Amino acid sequence: MHQALPSSPTFRASQRQPAPAEYGRPHRSQPQRDFFRDVNESTGYEPFTAEQLEAEERTQIPPQPSVDDSFRPSYAEPRPHTAAKRTSKHGPVVQGINLVSTHALPDRLRASFPYPLFNAIQSKAFDAIFNSNSNFVLSAPTGSGKTAVLELAVCRLINTFASDSFKIVYQAPTKSLCAERQRDWQAKFGTLGLECAELTGDTDNSHMRNVQQASIIITTPEKWDSITRKWKDHQKLMQMVKLFLIDEVHILKEERGATLEAVVSRMKSVGSDVRFVALSATVPNSDDIAAWLGRDPMNPQIPALREKFGEEFRPVRLKKHVCGYQASPNDFAFEKSLSGKLPEVISKYSQHKPIMVFCFTRNACVETAKMLATWWSTKSPKDRYWEAPLRHLVAGDKELRGEIRTCINNVHNCLLTPLDTMSSGVAFHHAGLSIEDRNIVEKGYLDGNLNVICCTSTLAVGVNLPCHMVIIKGTVTYQGGQAGGCKEYSDLEIMQMLGRAGRPQFDDSAVAVILTRTQRVPHYEQMISGQEVLESW
Image (tube, rainbow, N blue to C red; front, side, top):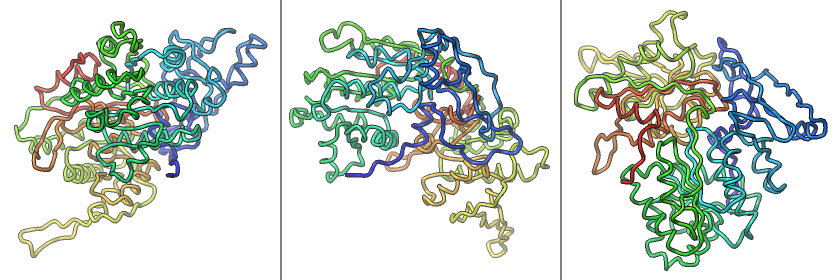
């Protein structure tokens, strides 16, 4: 049996609970920020402990909590708090929603949620998800704590069935999301006797036994489709599935959406009385998803229960901008031309805070990092948009170390020009680096010794770094292999990259800038506003 791994930073950020320790040293020019804040930080609500809630019930006098203001991330500005409205019969009220105490859960399940109160979104969904067996659809912004709603559905099942009499299927669109969820939930639910197993294209036959014995199966639409096409070969497994969790259900509008539709239809037909819970980014027609899923197996004609939340419930205020440019039709030439636009964009939006630049190839990451390091080094200290590192970082990669040869006139007359980007507070990060060098870059960024990372879209999932500003440098990505070439990012990939900006544990506000071709500006403006209608592929 594999040892449970600790929960990842991404999972902890999605829960918006107080962090146990500060990430890294503060930047010298910015005040420190309180890590011990409310699970719903966007409203300014300050947390109340269980003891305070109990004392209030006895005295009916609302206690005034104190907040330790000694810890702030390096780039966060202090934000005034708005006192939450309280009554003697209910918990705090945030945006018109009574926050639910985790004491509403049975004792053995409460430890899965190590904070005193659920946030506004989780509290609004609590009755529908934990006190009923109806199918449920939640549409809410990135980073608003949607994952905890899935966990409440798992807790409902644990509280209803014996652990060896059911299976749960969690379905996410990417293998990286599956790997992250397996680590998080093994650590969280392993103590309750539930084993989590990952079932993706990377799962070999030697691990299939773990999948068969697991209570929670974490998979992708394509892999579950291949397993269940001949579902009668796995009839016992299929009959045991009582809860089917769909993350990022808005991929229905993409080419892969047809596979997701087929999987859901197949699960409805196996007769196991499976419950569906679906999470979506903000979309205007989440009611269509609810109608598609139906209320339950006995009432498929009635829409599923549904909750929808707008951007005002996002835990960090995110300002989004789309910049369009006319340039060469060649994608590589266009991407290179965008390098010249970065100084202007950073000067306008960065506020001297950490930046993440997403590039479409590994080589583009390297070249962009060099360009930004050169731009920074030519500025006087007072005109620079990020500070120099306090200590020098040493990596194994030659390009990270700055061993770059610039040839003058001919190949025999080469000058070894030291251009160590990390000494300028800039680095690049992609899958071609060794894990040691990636760890050096990540830790340097967390510690504040690096302020800019130029990376590929793979960093949008998994490792969570406290980024204030995200720049998507071009909206196409290069794919290798036989069908290699450039193609537009999917909306899911764009949203994941934007989601790196302003994670709740690290920031109060954030900014995201998309650089694209002029003709694509209306599409991305509609997408980031949450007004793009979700339609079946």
